[in-house]
Image (cartoon, rainbow, N blue to C red; front, top):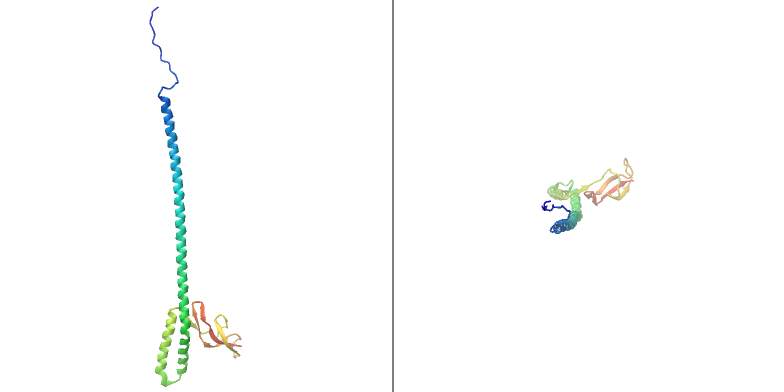
Length: 190
């Protein structure tokens, strides 16, 4: 027999080398840290998105409030203008009535033609100025009586006129749009 010694064969084992368990644990820890960082980042993003949504909602509400304010201010300004025009018109209407009466008094008098033409010009100018701000006279002869638009000063029987119909206008009425500034003073057929 020979005394030959055989080299031991390398035996494979499933046991890791000495440095391998530490590397695996470090990789797992690194993975866990990475996942924790991702979750933290996602939570931060969600919080920031929620805050951005709050700011967007606040901005939208503020914009809507401002738009409502602007519309309300425009309506109030238009209403104030209309009230101012109506107040001025109510102050001017007696003067217009006086001009109407002056024109009626000068009819048929030749010596007062110059005066009448001057009064006519003034009267036409005042009526035109009222029309420019939306005030219109109305004279409802032949219309049915409406207490919302007319003021009856007398009622008398008139041949050929239906009862309740306006047969004569003593004083014209005036409107600003659909609003009656002064009702027409009328005689109604009875």
